[in-house]
Image 1: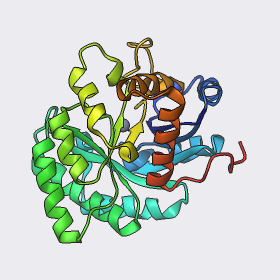
Image 2: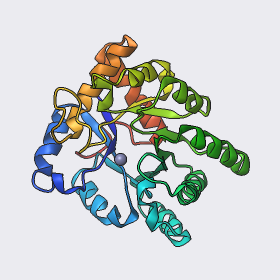
Image 3: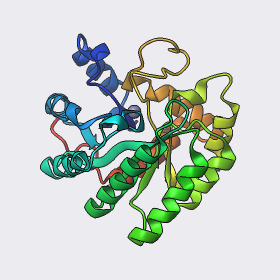
Length: 266
Ligand SMILES: [Zn+2]
């Protein structure tokens, strides 16, 4: 079975002691491609060093909405430069809007708009984080779409909102990625969202080290656990695990333009 974890953070301290064992477990679980997200560009060299050890790992570069106190035009230029500097960069992000934990709205929007532009210029998808900001985000996306005459490919990562909200993103042709939240007892709205995403737009992720799915909830999350996410999403959509894995892997290969499985020297 081929699984693709479209959102990981392996450069965090919680993986510094046992990354080789973590890698062995994801390989054993059938995870053959992973996308490493980026909270701020200063992480990039550490991410490259991890990718040197794990050829199945591909990279994003960008600035998280909760790190936008760092935002300057020059940092936007740096994101673009880093994205052009390494063939393993397959996405821009994570970027987006988070009005749950921060109130610097205009700064978040400026950083988000610039990263959408970079992604459009480079023909790479943009990885989007959205929390308590769906209606503002839709408005920004419509503006940017008009200004740039189209949007880059957009990946809504770790979707945790409602089915009604996600429909607006589906209309904008988003890919929508679900995390371990789908396994949480209280996440009925997220499970309703799983049911409204088109077949060819569905992705899965761990967002590790956060949000470990049941039955690992409360522990450190790791890429091997994407299988638990896949099982729950398959159940919601009435698919076998094999079919769900195949479908989400095809979508990820297409969205991020990843090399086909078995074409890498692992
Ligand atoms: Zn993330």
